[in-house]
Image (tube, rainbow, N blue to C red; front, top):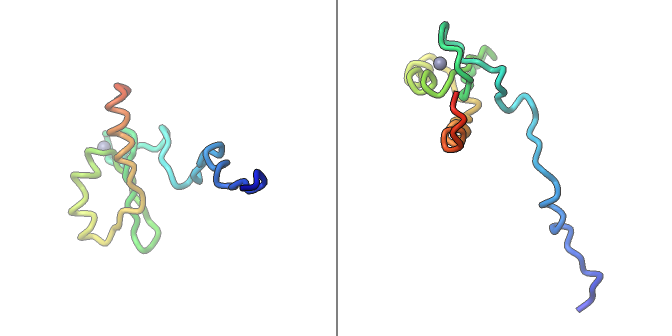
Length: 91
Ligand SMILES: [Zn+2]
C-alpha cells in the first residue's frame, strides 16, 4: 500500500456547510400573521412568486388553506424549532 493514496474525502469534515442566506430563516423573519410576531419557520409561495412566511404554529394552522389556494411550501425549518426547544431557547 502506498502512503500517497490520500482520499480527498477526508477533508470534507473541515468544511462547514454554509447554505445560501435566502434559503434559510433568520431571527429577522417574522410570522406574517398580523399580531403574531414569532420567528418564521415555514415559507409558502404562489406560482406568481408571492410568498408568505409563518411561524410554527400559524404555519400548521394555515397549511390546509394555503394548499387549497395554490401555495406550496418552499421552505420548512420547523425541525429547527424542535431543536431550539430541546436546547431550552424557545422565544
Ligand atoms: Zn405566527
